Length: 191
Image 1 (tube, rainbow, N blue to C red):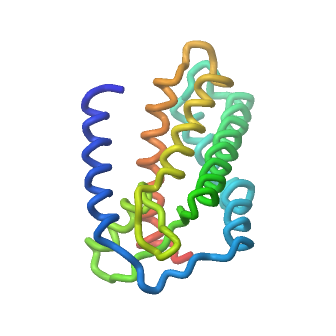
Image 2: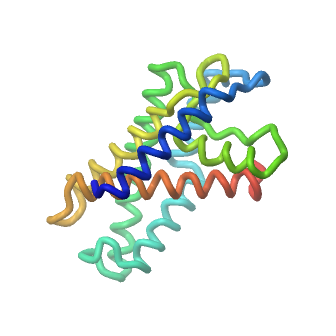
């Protein structure tokens, strides 16, 4: 990993850690096992999951990434399949680790109304999870799931020449995109 990227990620993790240790939610109630499983299924194969998979494939096709798959219908189909595979790996890892560690990596909108708190919540939620009491902690399930999905894709089904370093770079980009999606959820989409 290049030094500036590593430094930015390290600084972000320290900032998120400080934010996580300073925030708890008194109104948090851990969802039931049934609701947690439903969220897992919806985020893996639900309608919004497919919209994200197709949108990501469309963006990758437009930017021709990876270039070996070209800007064709077949290239788009490969990217859809790749994004679906990464989504399954990512969400399965997150769900399994959440259940094993008794964490909740689901995104919760801020209860505060000021812009700074809401923006902080959106970004921190990318790197944190909630304990059973609602306290934030480092979100190892989401971080590990995101990097695992991208590294596995780069090492297995991406064209020759891609490796774990490309997967780590893609994982970091994916976490950044997740932060942007959380900001959209916080300020625009009220689900």
